Length: 382
Image 1 (tube, rainbow, N blue to C red):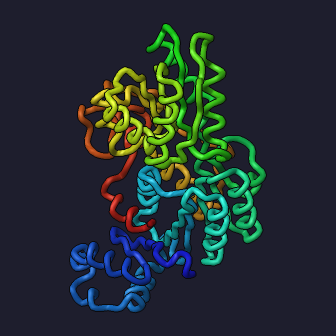
Image 2 (image 1 turned 135 degrees about the vertical axis):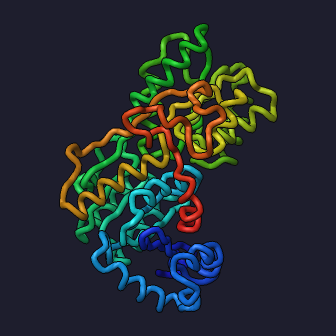
Image 3 (image 1 turned 30 degrees about the vertical axis):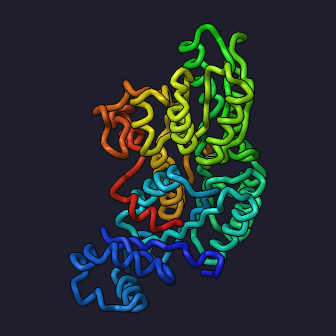
């Protein structure tokens, strides 16, 4: 692991035991967190072993285990709660296997994502999952993976890209449909019309551009988008742009943001300024979402499950690595729907859950975080 990523971790699955490999202080911290579990599972003698010795013993125990000796890399565009929850879905799919998981995040900087992918390839990964920063940067990275014989999946595909030949499959959140869902909710809830302010994500990612297009296509003449500014999936930035847009458009009635990571920040700002008159709509899922939806500062959510993003893409990778099979369709559609606080079950819902019956055919849709794996996810990426 090179110096640039000396605080990022690698994770090893060994049955129910999660082992993390890291230099420096992170190894010590993780050792403390997991010491009790190791003691129960491996015996007190194992606790005295060095990381090298433990790795050797573990490798022997993994002989014949699915994924033994293989590494899977993930390159995230940046780090926020959605990413942590997404990562719990990947960990959920890898439980009980011998795969090692290496994760990099790029601070929402396109140039850093390309470098991160190159670093993962230097670690001789067997497969790669990406959450794009920008279409171009990510495409450049996965094409390098293709040249190295590494199969890739895309977690947030938004249409044709220069890197598509590198993917065995992609996960698409159809934001034209998502935009229609949001537009229909706005027109139903504010039938008299009004100005809409939008806090988008990363410009150039493809995701935000498609979402905006979907909303614009389905709005009637009485509603119009007065301003769009990027929150870049960062809470402080989202508050700043919301304040700026409301200052410029004090008569705006509606705010739409494209991720709950930004949405909970916007909700906090609306509460602090007493603006419960604003119809605030967010997208996707995180742990604070339920609180703000129940108190009305988020009125509705174009919901999709963060953890299901990891589940669906890692099922693709496992099926390819273990069975040589690509998904039946190049594009797998990410489930989505509008929800309000009325959709929570129970209400309030348990942490990590909206409603396990939200999609009776697939309970994972109503789960946005496998909370039992959240500590491992947070230690895995920093």
